[in-house]
Length: 297
Ligand code: GDP
Picture 1 (spheres, rainbow, N blue to C red):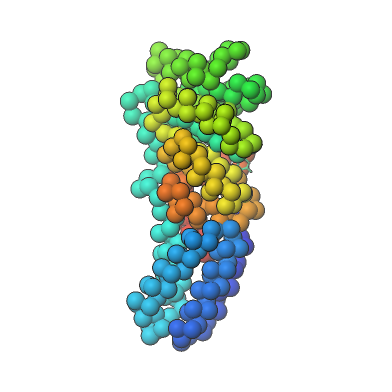
Picture 2: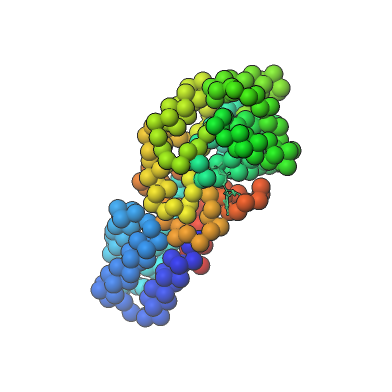
């Protein structure tokens, strides 16, 4: 996902480190190239601008040009700054699931990978934390989506709430809560309906479910391939529903990766997990150092 950015930065850094002595103009030119590379990767303009300014300030403060290995110093500052803007929560993978049964609300647009991510996280909670998880689909307009969750449940050995025709999402959420309490589940996950665009009905429905479920975590699933759009979607969902974190899917694809770099700075919300494929194990905790490493090669 970061191949192009990585290649571009690699080129800039190669030139910097080979050059030996560096003037301030050399550093400025290099940072201009870094800025262009970030923008081409679909990093939002204010984030790219702040990033370059922070690097510039540090490079000046540390008198990089007077050091013995100026190029390497600049590379290190860029690396640190990259890690800095990626850093969110202390432990993005730790879901708040004390006081069982803990509700987790999953929201996002249709096709973002919400149902897949719900099942991936359920599997993870079961296998890594030994939790008993119940999943429920609230997508009453798309019976196929409800069945998809049930099929994934069987595949990963996680229970799903039986489907009752004609029930509305709030009623399903209440039934999930009851079932989770009575059944001794640690966590219940509510996979809300998605739509192609954020509209009033989508928001109203998600808000109504949120109000009855009182979720411990509200995770927004967004398609990482959509770049700045992913960040805009996250901002809007957060404004209207309030989210506790973001899961960026399709990070295995050949998108430009800008969403990952802009998300925190623009929305204030941490990326908690990244989806890396269609398989049920293809999910990772969002680790800034690993992502920075991927970008810087
Ligand atoms: P929903 O409409 O948001 O519930 O989306 P789905 O969970 O049904 O996912 C839509 C499609 O995206 C499915 O074919 C998934 O297998 C696929 N998908 C989900 N997450 C990822 C991911 O991280 N990487 C890739 N390559 N595909 C994904």
